[in-house]
Length: 294
Image 1: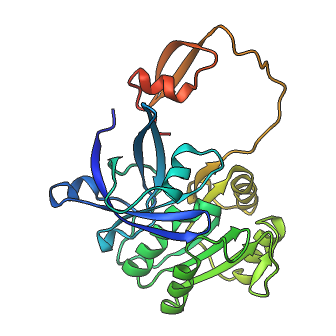
Image 2 (image 1 turned 90 degrees about the vertical axis):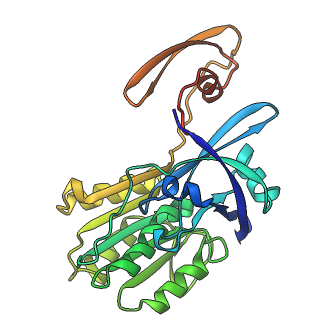
Image 3 (image 1 turned 60 degrees about the vertical axis):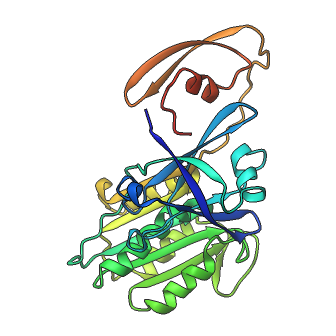
């Protein structure tokens, strides 16, 4: 089971019209518990109307600055994300579990590597932590970022990323892809095969990349991964984190009366539970003391 610590909110910063970043105050005695590797996430727990809700958010700060910052994008009807974007204030207390996750980039000062990352939307959060860490710790490495968003105004951390490009001109380059606004400083559309091939075949055809980091919607990740594999990139060089799944419409039985038996698999352990058909599976799992992170 995850252990939750009561942490005070140190800062709430509006990053875009529908996203905030939140910094937590870490007491000295808890510093070691909240050490993290770039790419990891924390799980936040809060009760609403007597029911506990857990949500996982990736850390976007660098381990070097001893700051625990996450980005929270408001999701329509998302109980916690709506609260965080509209009501969360400095001084509020939230229950937070220690960092975890395997989508990570361990930096080594002596490295001389080339990294390429494709991200979309809030998928930037874990990768931003990786970027900062590489730029600060691996002076001979280079990081290329391809970042898809709706527009410049809705690009989370755009100002911070642009400042990093200016500061680390020889190490860091970014290519924006805007789906709803035309800009002479960005691709127009989504991260599609045309954009991927332009990056790989033209802009960086003379560079051999050591690792690829993909984070965002399932459709984008699948396309980039498939393209890389077809080009001969080894599977172990491709690291990915799924931030949203493709929605597939299927005909379902809308009758929620009666009970159902479900089997939940967590950490390779199965738990079978009888529940009402109108209940939410996540809430049932938490009520049975299962360590469900989302």
